Image (cartoon, rainbow, N blue to C red; front, side):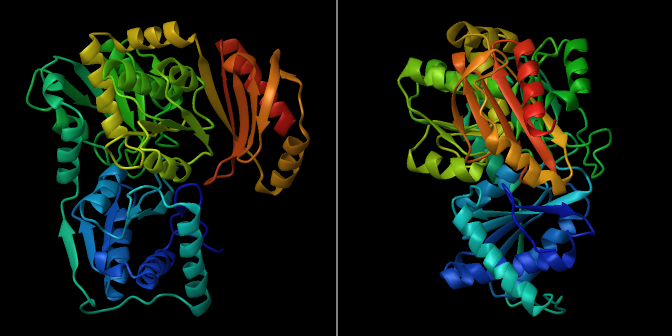
Length: 470
């Protein structure tokens, strides 16, 4: 089956399609692409997460690239994806590769390409890489080479410089001395130990759960920091009297928050709070970029503070170029991935978890109180997402049903507009909305809704399912 890249990289089942042969093809294609562009002498940075054999796949990538004569720096241990992205920029490399399947199930692994900006590869870069991949697939497998490479593979610490950079993005001293009780949940992934290292040395304590790497992600189908995966984190925060719970996905580019009562703070609330923190608490201004699955609360905040808000398709490959070209204050998507001005144009769950703590410390408010403050400003908003498995053979049928759907109202709210360039989104009265779209990496139909009550959100999700898969 041909190698195809989705919303953010190529992901496949280990030992089925994700094989050493196919990873070598991707690595050779990356090296060939850089050689053709004249950027090869700037080198490639390679990192990997804690999944099964990720270190071995990453070493294979490094050796294939080095054999092509392209300088390579290989991480000396597992790294969060934002640390790899930072290394690309910090070292002025031509590109980065990280072996990770992010939040996908344990049987998956993946290959993410990071361009010189450190962000997600855009459609043009992906198309060029896939062109080289297709050429190599036609000519046969890339052989393993014995003996010395054309250039040596350099091993380096990529985590330390990244943490130093994060420490310059957020004033850590007040956080360390605030006496906060933080429960961190890296979900067995590459974010293990990061918050503890950043916040060590003061009265704030970080208790870590699921911190030891485990490629099986026991008890978690998808290592994604969303409500149904964070029940134990919620119980521990509430039961231990902690101030906050901070979770990251498998490669730590996403964040999920739990307040002091154990309530999951939705990803839409979290990004809205981040924007409020930047503009109200820190006094900064600038454009905001959000995906079409992010909250309409961000638009309300934009109007309040006089900054433009731009909506994009799903995926940071769509947000990153605008984040850079607009010199945006923040960019965020529904999946829990956000970034801020002065940082890489890519998601960072570790930095954004720290920014949530920074907001708590600077305002003296608990996380639940910050959500209440947000609702006082923009009105109460509720949100949920339901992922539906479907037979890929029915995709054309589902597409046809959604293309022909033209409801005048949904869940009792007037449909005020629709967007169909990335799924099927219906904008409703009062800032509510509903969306149906296909996952870019799995056979899932994702349904999303935001409205003024949990009951209306549930109705919208039910009607979404009826529209797509009756």
